[in-house]
Length: 413
Image (cartoon, helix red, strand yellow):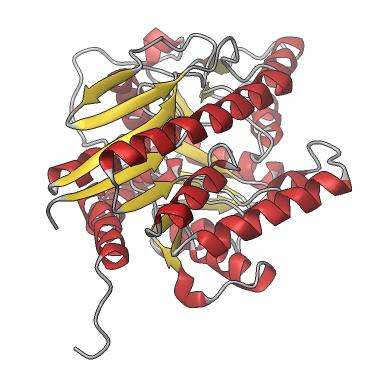
């Protein structure tokens, strides 16, 4: 496919550390390498309060990125800051997207779902210009907020939100979701046709290939080299089961095992306060890490935790698991055993599934004395990823879907 232009709209884009922005950047760069002209409309980096300021327009690895200012609405420390940032991005990206579309004449518009209403911007513009709209849906809202009971959302707001979703779903020519469970949710609860939904899992961000390091990472983190290290990396928020990890750290404080958290989120300060009050020296909290150091931490961990609250697999899929698999690090899935990821991990024997604190504690207690089992599961994890989920395979699936939207298959052929 040549001489094709795609306009992509999403609040987060590299160098923002948000996983959606990082994945999107890699996808856009791949599409550009396939002779597709890619224009991206994003916000100034804002995922953390320390996010750097970048030019309003720049060329990044062949992709033209246009930025809108979010003013002082940077970071996620307060709900007001986040909502204000969302609103500023939606308004300003709407204006800028029409301007860029007139100038570039795109063949297709693609948006992610961050912020949740950005599909309105892309869908309306695609409808106006009579071109295909591709909607990549990583999380189904407001269903997640309702299920977690994180906040008391007024009924009128839920109705408006669902109405917005209906418009986005109707405008979209194709909706891409990362799991079969999410596809089922859209079909059964949103009355969408099966043909309109494509399942494409995420790839590892970053992909980590095994290598040796001159300096071990554990002493740098405050973990004795001979002790086991279990890693949780990602959003420390409402969707994850995180208290059971700290519960296990309390129970296992006298054993040679340490827990490392990397990331930010609504629950981080609460967890830090708890570890301080419990005087836990086997729990370590780190901010988001530079990619190279993060890769080393993942690779030198004995196991990586992936957690999800019961019932939420219907609305979201934990993408960080693919990073751990790529590195050949076994996964401990802390979630109901009937979830898609838990079934994958147990079927391929590349980790373990536990459903509560007691099972997690017993598993870790047994693994301290059986370190070779970590290695065996890790080898299975690595094989699973590189045979089925590596970046090039998944990106080509995106390319195939986008080609179909721009050049429909002739039914008479």
